[in-house]
Structure formats: C-alpha cells, structure tokens
Length: 298
Image (tube, rainbow, N blue to C red; front, side, top):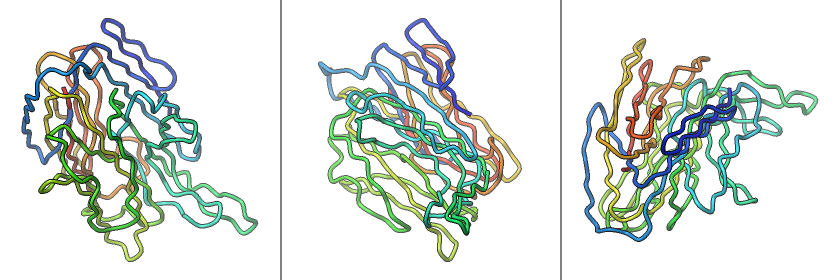
C-alpha cells in the first residue's frame, strides 16, 4: 500500500505514492486526550512564511523499500499515522524490526517506511512475519534548526534545549518494534515541552521491549499558530475527530501515541487524515484502545 496525492491552490489529484501538496501561505500543528488548546504565537510578520505541506503514506507486510518524500533541504517530515502490528520482528542478523519510519538519507532526501518485521533463518536468510504496518507522514516547508534524533529505549530524554520563543515544535518521527515490543495497552511514546526544553519519553511493559522511537524538532516561521489536542478510542471502537478549523492551510503531526500495536490490521491504529480541498480541515482516526496527541500548525 503506497499512496501519493498532490494538492496545490486549486488542484487535487491522487498519484501512486501519496504526496498531498499545499502551496499558499501558512500552516497549523497540535496534541491531547479529546482536548483542544489553541496557542496563538503573535510574533510578527516574517519575510519567510510557511508555504505549504505534503502528505505521504506507505504500508506493506514485507517490503522495506521506502517512499521518497523529496529533498530534506526544503522540508521537514514528521510521523502523522501508524497502524498495524509493530510487535513482530527482530534486530538480529538479517532480521528486520517492524517499522513506521521517517528517515533522512545520505543523498539528502527524506524517506518513509511502513513494513512488518522479519527474523533470520537457519541458513542466514530473511524470513518475514508478514505483519502489516502502515505509516503516514506530513512534511512542512521549514528546516530551521532541525534535529532528527533517536531514543534507544525506555525512559525520558532531553531533545532540545530552549523553546525558541514558542516557534520550536517536536514530533514523533518513527516507531520500531520487535517481538512483543508494542503489546501492552499502556505502551507509549511521546514528545513534550517542559520548563524551557523539549523532552521525549517512551515506556513499554514487556521484559525486553526493544522498541526504538525516533523524534524530530524544528523551528517554524514567526506568526505560526499552533493547536494541540488529543483523541482516543475504547477497545473495539473507532472514532474520527475533526482537529482543525477556520480558513487557511493547516497541517498536523503526531506527538504522542499509546496502546497495543499488535493486531494484523491496516486500520488498527492512529491516523491523521489530510483534507481533500485547499482550505479543508484535518481529521484523526483512532481505533481499538489507542490514544494520540497531535500538534497542528497554521
């Protein structure tokens, strides 16, 4: 499953590898538990405005080939959705963890991976579990002071020193898991501001979780308005919630996910959905005991 849709001021079209592009000026990001908070940072006009966003998705059971989201020289991509089974895979030998991943590459591009896990066979071959994983990403046209980083296990870690006068935002960038890593309803990963810094936090309840979380922080242009909120669903439920409002272009990414990602289902998870029109509103769909927090930028 690999989608791409492109949106300009008055054009929307679907391509093979989801890339939804909006060009016009302005954006919006957010996080919470069925809660919404607007944070209007009136920082004056900037000569450099946020000019648009792109949206991408990639989902497979056994194909680690990434979707190319474009040059990292003019955009920053963040995780905006994950669904499926992150609890089958291996770090050993030629094994593969299950991944929902935004990644920088040596050729200065940003790639998106969504695939299940594998282990190494007795003959040194890769044996796939064929567990489905769907990943989605939103890219913003800003790169100032960008930092991608990786959290190698459970615990709380400092991500960024200083909040850049309210313009700095951090997001989840990737979730990786092996056998049993995302199997408890309270397993979670998040980024959050506290005091004058941004922090990341991850907790998993298996004895050897081996769940790796990647994050990204970036400064947005002056005048960006941020909205934060949250959404959740009880076991067996699916809920969709509108998370933006008003006119203008907006874009959203994930800052917190919680729940057991251990079902072989393309729709069992947390997915932020882009609008189908230039001034449309974003939504989030949460299912089966999952929770999420998001930030939207406008």
